[in-house]
Image (cartoon, rainbow, N blue to C red; front, side, top):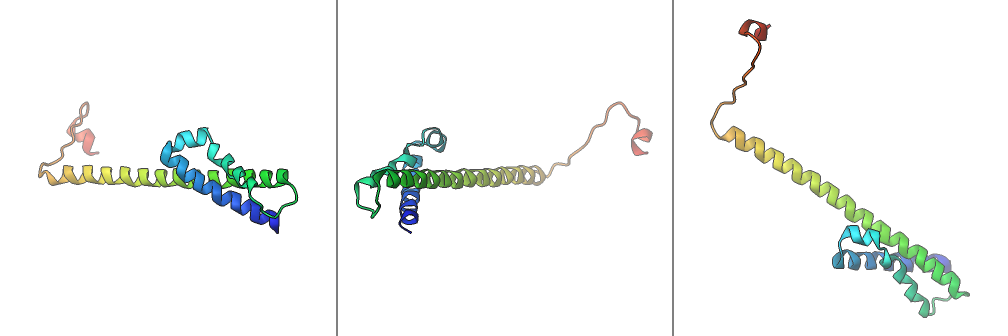
Length: 119
């Protein structure tokens, strides 16, 4: 049970360090240099009730990397959703501006006679 607690402490710390990393450097650089995922190993200096410091460091790093990349995944997913919504709003505004001008849209077809076009 102690190992799960240490892993969760590492994951929570990884999420916090991911947020700090995203704020200090952008998401792309945070993913490229995941130093925030290794920083939860600093909890090793505290007494977490484990038998081995190496075991605690391993669990903290595993939890930290997991929490770090989960936070980055949420951040990237949010960017993708926001980008799609923004693109949809831009397209809707463009269509509404074209229709609100009061001008009529005409289609010019070249190379066909009217009879061929109406068939």
